[in-house]
Length: 218
Image (cartoon, rainbow, N blue to C red):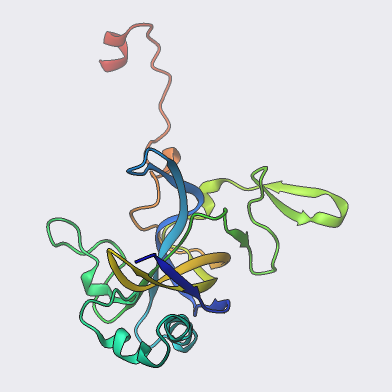
């Protein structure tokens, strides 16, 4: 059977917190065919009580395009791979919850291999473009340099996406394809999505006054 895919129209998430953020620098892997792939994305954390109407409607739309009148049965099937998970399932190999996750949340992965997602601030100004700058005033060519570590796991975003239903030899389900992101606010950093900034891990040193390793370690 040939793999089949169908897509919903573009939809928008509620306000979500990002974990495992890869919206600026992609995750780079070599697949089983030896092809290097770049993936941008994040795991979205929607607090308990979030309005997920738009997300669920997109899932149903993509599923209906794929399976028609049997879509409802597919969505309830025990082998259906749903993008929506409870925060309590986000655990490491030892069964410990990753930072930022807890029971009652709804989490879902947003990712894309197509292109780097657009990223704007609250005023809809591009945060990081191809040159790594923020466009403060595009018309007049004024720029402000923004460090990549100012957008990270722990920040809150709105995201646009499309739901993708798939039916393949290895299973069937729906995944969520990331389109663009709007940074709404910063928050405490969460683990994942890259190493912490060096300035967060080191303190200023007094002049050691020595020239060799022994002096520096004394």
